[in-house]
Image 1 (spheres, helix red, strand yellow):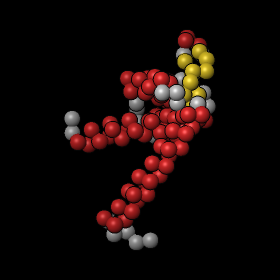
Image 2 (cartoon, helix red, strand yellow; image 1 turned 90 degrees about the vertical axis):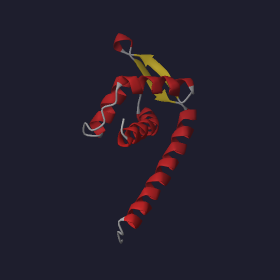
Image 3 (cartoon, rainbow, N blue to C red; image 1 turned 45 degrees about the horizontal axis):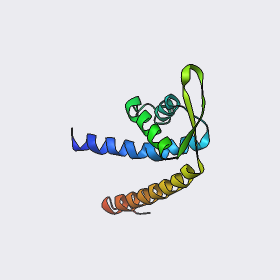
Image 4 (tube, rainbow, N blue to C red; image 1 turned 30 degrees about the vertical axis):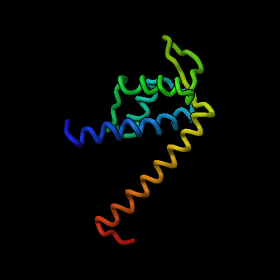
Length: 115
């Protein structure tokens, strides 16, 4: 595995932590809905596997960040964010904002971009 592949897999993993919680804050979803929504919003560039999504959903539920709301057709489990999950989402959004501002400043300096 190359460094780029490792970096991208770690990046996807952390993006899902934040983006997944954000999606659960918008409406009740099942794992398949999350996979399709990420694929749709990334114009097909991110195709996350169920092997990544479902363990993360289980972890989020175990940590009390999301909770099962009902079972849909064919036993699909739907989840929504909890109050604890909203607190965690706000933390993650603040970290993401900080990181993006850091990268913006870094790139401006490296590529000598003037405003």
